[in-house]
Structure formats: structure tokens, C-alpha cells
Length: 334
Image (cartoon, rainbow, N blue to C red; front, side, top):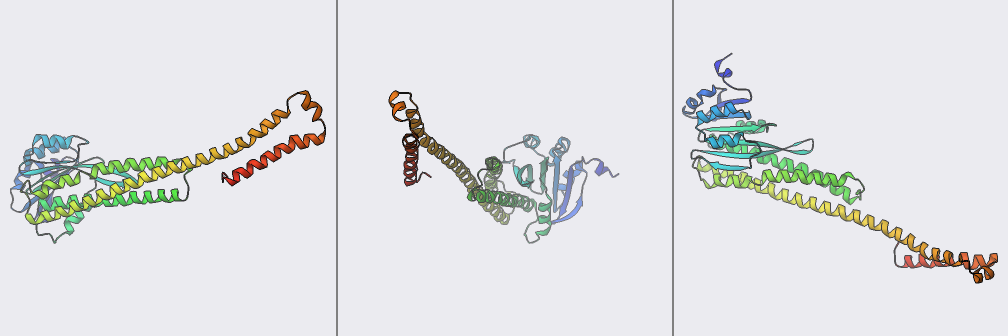
């Protein structure tokens, strides 16, 4: 087996480009510094894990700052961008949809003048689409690390749109169920809260993207050609659109939750009103029954015939019942 493959840890892939085209792959990691000195070379090092040994080698070969390497090894770093003189260090989050649920993937990126290092934490964010775009975009004036970084960030932000569309579809289904009055489904509030949780995670990942792109657009570090900044502005505009869509989706979910709670409360009020009507009807009937059920002599001696029983006993209850029903109907209580 070749020496360069033996020196390359599992989960590490290194590709060398010359003038935008693949020149060779998988060079020996310990000799990357020599590759960087070749004219027109661009190195893309992809590390999945992350692998501490590979990052230590990258630190030595690329001259990376120990704090940046430490951040790349640390899980759940906040999205950010830091400038280290001759390279950018970024922490971004890609978003995908797995079984109709939002999945967030953490990526650390080192972008220098002629190299790009991606550190992906498991479950790793797929880079197939970014690679396809990189090989198919031949119209860009430059094919350097700036163009490669733009392609990667553009792919990540475009993935946000796909995830937003999936969330919008699920929210639309919820709204249709609410309109049809299917609020008796006990799982509906749980689905709303689940979507709100996914949306919150999604927004926490996408919102910092505009702050990450700002230093690159301002040119705080002069690493990329001036004509490449326009492409990063396009990614920035897309990120703003995603954030606006996320805010709109959050408002729709909040409205759906409020509608669901209101309809449940209205249904409970209707049930309470029906029970109140029944209790109100039986209240005078109970009074009449109790009044004539007293064992006073005047009641026993004068209301003794069947005619008196039907007239005063049953008749008074029927009249009271009809009057109450007429009153409730007039007031539209049922």
C-alpha cells in the first residue's frame, strides 16, 4: 500500500486542484506544506470526526492557530467567524431534513489564500452537492479558495431553503386540519410544539450566517479577489430571505397554536353551556318535586286525587319545562 495512504487517517480526504481542476487526490498529509508552495495549487482537506491527529497535522502543515484548532475539536460551538491574519476560521451549521424532522450538522472551516479545510462532526453534513457545484461552475473568473468557500456556503444556505419548504408544508397541513376543525386530535398540540422546536433549532443555526458573511463582504482580511465579494453578497441576500421565511413560519406556528387553544376552549365552553342548560332545567323541577313532597296536612288532604296530581304535580313541571325551553331558545342558548 502506498506510503501516502498509510499516513492518511480514516475519515480524512485531501484533494489538490490546479487551475480549478482536480490534479491529484490524497497526498501525504505530512507534505501538504510542500503542495501549498506549488504555483496555482489549491488544497481542499476534509476531516470527518473530527480526527485529533489529522487536525494536529493540519495545524503544523497549514500554520493554524491552536485556539482555532481547539474550537474545531470542540462540539457545539456557536456559529462564528474569526480572522487569523492570513486565513478565516468559520463555524457554520448545515441543515437537512431526515424523516420530516430538521437535522442540524456542525462544520468548522479554515479558508486561506490557497486552501480550504472542512471539519465535519458526525453525523457529517454531506458535501456531494458542494462538490458537484464546484466542478460544474466554470463561469467564475477565479477558481481559488474564495470561490470554493463561496460554493460551500452557497450550498449550505440553499439547503436552508429546502428545509424551510419542508417545514412550510407541515405547517400548511396543520392549518388545513385546524380549518376543518380536527382539533380533537390529541397529537395536534404535540406536533405544533415539535415543529416549534425544530424551527427554533433551525433559526439558531441560520440566523448567525449574516453576521458570518459580513466580515468577508467588508474585506476585513484581503484574501479573495474583489470580483468574488459579489458572490458572497448573493449568499448574504439568500440568508436574509431564509431568516425572513423562518420568522414568517414562526408566526404561523404561534397563530396555529393560539387557534388550536381557542377552539379547544370554545368547545369546552359549549359543553359547559349544555350542562348548565340541563342543570337549570332540573333546578325548578327539583324545587316543585320537593315542595309537593312535603308531608304537611294541607298538601296531603287537598292534593289527594289523581286529577290534582296530574294538574299540580306533573302539569306544573311540564309548564315550567316549556317556559324554560322557550326562554333558552329565545336567547339562542341552544
